[in-house]
Length: 255
Image 1 (cartoon, rainbow, N blue to C red):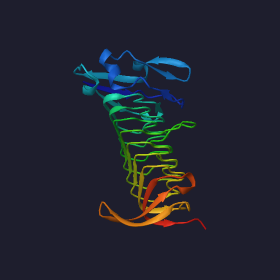
Image 2 (tube, helix red, strand yellow):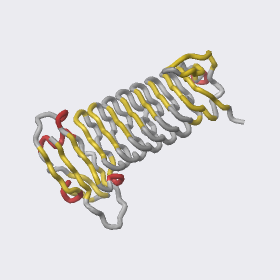
Image 3 (cartoon, rainbow, N blue to C red):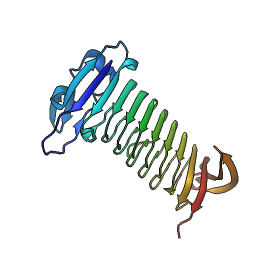
Image 4 (tube, rainbow, N blue to C red):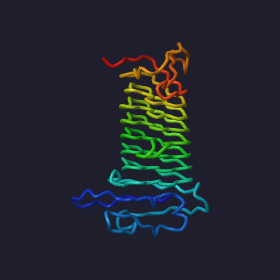
């Protein structure tokens, strides 16, 4: 089953659409779904032009395709457990919240908290991801616990904060406090980032570029080979009795 949702042109207002109902399993019962714009509840066909091809008996066989001004959509794929969501443009905040299965592919930019506290499945962002990608929410004790997030552009600040499992890969640069409060899992940044692994307790963080503002409470172990690269290995964060592993190509301490 392929469900295509093309956002209808909107007037000059910028209120986001709360669209947590857009997950593949919900379309097994039809397209009679609701979304919210502010305090107003709207039918799906009031916001989108809806078309359906084929049918399915399980969420794994449902593909949802979103097009138009989709950056105004929030919480798409929340609690998703199977199937596929393809976003032809950008997507708003909290895409893939608490996701446990399936695949979300975003062809544009993703706003904050992409893959927040996800437990499984795959998110692919073909462009940039904003702050708190694959992290926990404010006040939460754990971020991502499973699955994979791959960003082909750059990521913002607090990438993979409090990550406890799974894999996060960023092909560009990342922002400040990359992998802060890391508890487990694997984080790979192909470019540069700032202050990686602050207060890290466990897991492995790889920085193939330069770790700017390197945290001084990491202990240098030596040089290792990883994926054909010579990386400097550190352990820490010792300020938190951490047992994490931080691998960097180069590093700079703050002046």
